Amino acid sequence: MTDKEKGPAQDTGEPAGEVLPEAEEPGKEEVPAGQEGDELDRVKSRLAYLAAEFDNYRKRVAREQEAIVSFGNERILLAILPFLDNLERAISQSRTAGTEGVLLAGVRMTYDQILAELRKFGLEQISAMGELFDPNLHEAIARVPWEGKPEGTVLAESRKGYLLNGRLLRPSQVTVAHGAPDAEPHVGESGDGPGCFGQGSADGKA
Image (tube, rainbow, N blue to C red; front, side, top):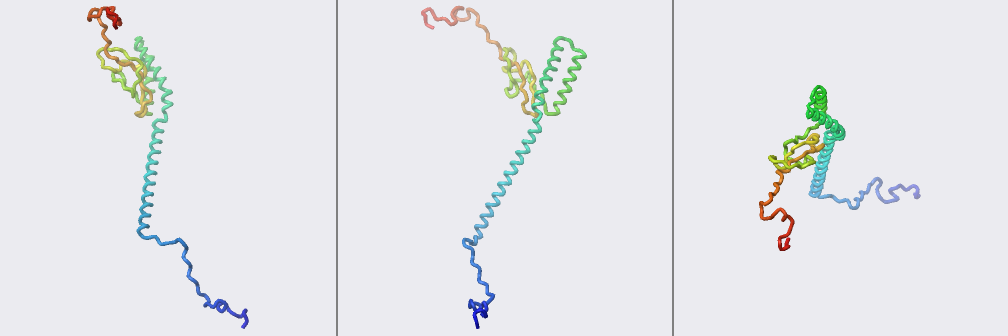
């Protein structure tokens, strides 16, 4: 029999169709059950942390959007307030001059209507007259000695202040009481004569 007539089994000396077992991949080892549980716990903890972070982000975005809605009209309202100031001055001057009449009533009606509409957007006037000075709400433009009023009492309001949804939009410009004026010393009340204030004694000492 020639070499060409020999079959595959005769060439290798092994039975035909036999499959050799596959070699295991290097570095691939079975993970113990305890380590698998620890890894699962770490993954669960990480997922819980990410879920909490996302929830905080969602709440922060919701607060920012709410602030935009609440205070988005701030610049527009600040531009309108000077018109209210002029209407208030017209009403006050008409009352002072004793010229109240149909014109003043119309101005007053316009003022009330504008203020009522602005209140729908969260605008609120600050109460200042007779209140104690609050640096968070008031801006003192003058201090006047005044008997019978506690120190810091608001005596006059030159410009109204406003809140927008509870936040300061513009402080009130006010005049506050400074307390009773200091009594001037009378001549002869003490041992010093009228020419002794700021002067030395007879021996030249200060």
